[in-house]
Image 1: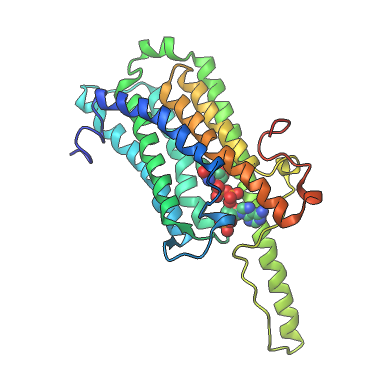
Image 2: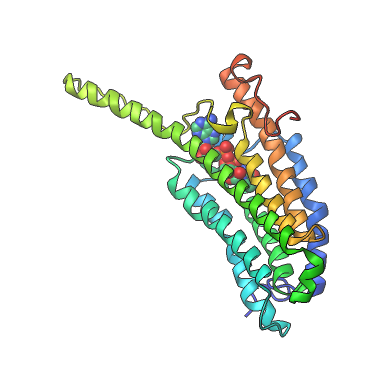
Amino acid sequence: MPIIQDWIPPTRENYETLLFGWQIAYPIIGSLQWVIKWYGMGKTSEASPLNIPGRIAWMAMECPGFLTLLYIMRTLPAEHGITDLPWQNLVLAGLFVIHYLNRAVIFPLIQPSMAPIHISVAAMAMGFQVCNATSIASWLAAYGPVTAEAWKSQSSIPQFALGLLVFYAGLAGNYFHDEELREIRRREQRRQDKIRAEQGKNGDSDVAQAPITKHYAIPEAGLFRYMLFPHYFCEWIEWLGFWIAAGLTCTPARAFFINEVFSMLPRAVNGKAWYIAKFGEDKVGKKWAVIPGVI
Ligand SMILES: NC(=O)c1ccc[n+]([C@@H]2O[C@H](COP(=O)([O-])OP(=O)(O)OC[C@H]3O[C@@H](n4cnc5c(N)ncnc54)[C@H](OP(=O)(O)O)[C@@H]3O)[C@@H](O)[C@H]2O)c1
C-alpha cells in the first residue's frame, strides 16, 4: 500500500518531477541562510514555546529519510516487475542506511546534551529527508540501472570501490569530529563532578551545579586544528564517495551532494561568526570555517 499514492513510492513521471524540483528548489532554500540569520537549533537556539527537545526533534526529523528509502526499496521494484536488484543497488542503499542509523538514532542518543530545536527547523529537515530519500531510493529501486549490464556503463568496479573508500573515509572523519565535540561536554561534566566531589569532602553543602547543556569550547583535535566544521567537511566527502560509486551521471546522488553543501556551507560560515563573537577573533580567526584554504 503506498504511503502517498503515486508519490511514495513515485511513478516514473512523478520521480522525474520531484528530481527536477529538488535540484532547483533546495539550493534556493538553503541559500536563504545567507540572508536569514535566525536559526533555531544548536548554538543559536533560543527559548520558544515552539521548541522541541533536541534528541526527540533530531530523531523525528532524521528517521523519515532512511525509513522512506527502505520502504521504497521494498515496494517499488515489484511494481516494475523487478525481482532481483544488482548488488550495487543494495550496497548503495546499505551505505545510506548505515549513515542514517548513526545520524538519526545513535547520534542523538549518545550526545551528552542537545539544545532544543525549533519546530520549523525540524520540519524543514524532515522535508529534506523525505525528498532526498525518495529521489535516491527511486533511482536505486527502479529508475536507475537495474541490471548487471546497465551497471557496466554506469560505474565500473574500480570506480565503485573508489567511491566506497571515499565514503568510508568521510564517515570515519565525520564520526571522529562529532566525537570530539561530545568529548568537550564530557570533559566539562568530569570537571564539574570533581569540583562537587571536593566540595562534598569539605562538608560544603552549597554545591554548584552548572548544566553542561550549551557548554561550548573551541575544539582542537584532528582537523579542528585548521577549521571549525570538519564534521561537515567529512560528511561532504562521504556523499561525494557515494556519488562516485553510483556513477557521475547519477542525478539523485549529485543533487544530494550539492544540496548538502547548499544547506551546510552557510551554516558553517555563520557558525564561524558565532565562534568569533563568543571566543574572540584572536582565538578563532586563523581557523577556516569548513574548507581549508577556501572559506
Ligand atoms: N545541520 C545540518 O544542516 C546538517 C545536515 C546534514 C548533516 N549534518 C550532520 O549532523 C551532525 C550534527 O550537525 P550540527 O549542525 O548539529 O553540528 P553542530 O552545530 O556542530 O553540533 C553538533 C553537536 O555538538 C555540540 N557542539 C557543537 N559545537 C560545540 C562546541 N564548540 N563545544 C561543545 N559542543 C558543541 C552541539 O550541541 P548543541 O546542540 O547543544 O549546540 C550538538 O549536539 C554533523 O555531523 C553534521 O555533519 C548536519
